[in-house]
Image (cartoon, rainbow, N blue to C red; front, side):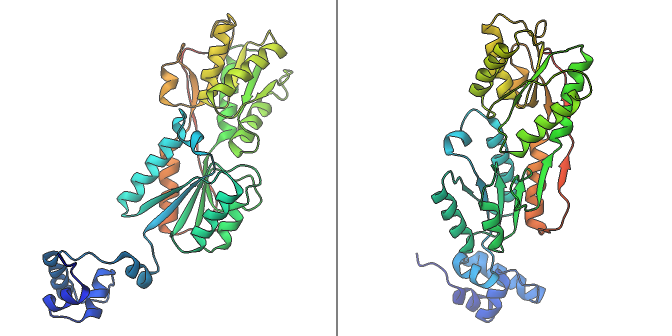
Length: 330
């Protein structure tokens, strides 16, 4: 069948083509009775607006870019953080009749393609996720004039509006819990130190230890299970008498628990363990993991609300509190 045209709708409704165009593009200047007549004709004919032509009129694409600065193997790994954020963002945008465009630049060439795509007017806004160090993408995208919001505090000097959790406070809560349990030699497994989450959780660890007479002991991870296992091995070699560990993610804590079990260390009898995130798997480690819960869905929903209602470059960041979830590992 031939696709119904704007002219056909106009003829059925007995109005001009321009009036039909205003109705289908959401103009508020059309008489309500005429709008009803036009919409009835649209439904009867099965007319579907041409999205490209509609974008030319409205200067809107109906799409929001979600840019995840990680390789696909990391995004689609066993780390549920990425899937949870992507799922929540997608659901919120779908509810607002918007389409999410997922982009995962993991090289300078990939970043250049994202910049060209955004500058070409293919999206109405951009959400940045998992930024590292001096990533040039935030500054490049902000120069395009397209609204940009970051999931997490950017480390780079180019700082778009962002929403995050209280990573410093969460780490401090974890450390205070371990100290209250009488632990004296507390080590940490950090996240990547080119990311604000890794830096801030390490800062909370160090701030809590300062003034207690206890020395800090850190091994770096990258938020993966494998890095947690390797870091735990390093910590045991550096201080065989350590009696507690704060891991900056639950996946790293799970890897560390595996290493401790292989080394014959009992948890929590010999070594207490606290993670960060409160992923579902934290309830099913052996023993169940004490952790710091961060409201992943709340942060993602807030970022979508900001990108849809209007980005104010001068707005203060939105920071959500964290919560300690005690379990058997401490």
